[in-house]
Length: 335
Image 1: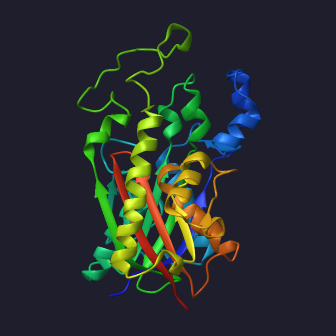
Image 2 (image 1 turned 180 degrees about the vertical axis):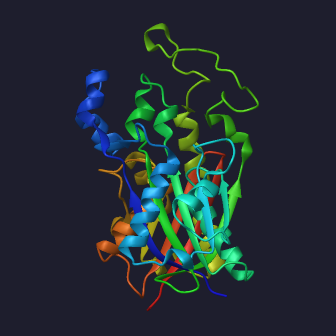
């Protein structure tokens, strides 16, 4: 049974932070420096909203934008690392809020920037096994709730958002070959140490750059150089593996849509692989790094800009926290 992406929508909260706002808190930076290095001018903050709230909005937008009958959804999957509760799963709560049938399969899974690709893999498996026919894949993160106010690097990077993708037995993009990888040795290079059962209590260590305290286990920590090194090692190898598995040459791919990490990293990945600039899609300037939602948001805009059509071969690639990575070939389909 073939598996397709049928429709994509997304949601951004109303509150946003500009580079000018960040420079007010960190005057040794400049708006131009942030824009040139990170490539982001605006990032969104889910102030009072949860990841579940944003996922609900994204799903409702999907239903309305594409006139989708809610009763046709037989599976609901939510990818998030910032769930509403430890339990129950946020997907179960969303089943009720979205008015989906009580016969749906509903569950969460915890992954970051590779989450969308993994979600496609799960959906492809469920459809191939004859378990599901119409899967609502939601990706939602509110990382800003984990970020310390004095952590200028992560504040300049991450944006809260949610995306909703309908995956079915027909659609606009067929999900073809996929590859995945994991290296847990890098787990502590992007981590929120405190709060779960390994370390329940906060240690109340405050970040204070003037005192040389630049990280706290109570907040999100990212070792930028280590993440950068991992990406430059894992992603080109993944691209090569996926091309080989798909029996494709690099030039056979019409558009490369990678996780929108930051401008600096994406540029070096593109150059190291040798992808022409006109085949490498970027969509983060006014959205930010939305973690597991960057790829579906980018695909949404690529469709709107006619960068993807019924003849297109598209490669998507997600990579990050875990370490975890995944890639897929998507082929345009005439509906």
